[in-house]
Length: 152
Image (cartoon, rainbow, N blue to C red):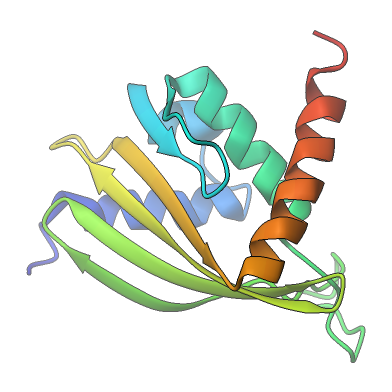
């Protein structure tokens, strides 16, 4: 593993996008033919537009409950319980473990990213546990996706 591995630039850009600092946002991060694997949808979701939709919905639902302290992590935006806790990265792949609280339930999962030589994400897979968490995420993601596509 070296800093020259394409996944390292992908991860830098991924985190910049999460902070709203990546020019071009998801369009600059995702390959046009990216494949998204949801923890609750049986069929792979193919293409940049549908992947952007799922990731945007996740960004609106997975931040989870505010921490008990209610403090802001930046002083500007409300803090959330979502955090990446571990990262494994090498070559063209990365695994980012995350945890959050949703409706008072602990959610633990991993984002598995694969990139091409140009550091664009070609595959994005999400796995989650425990079952109660999957059910809550499914319910909230469904509602968010319906809300986001209602105007389409």
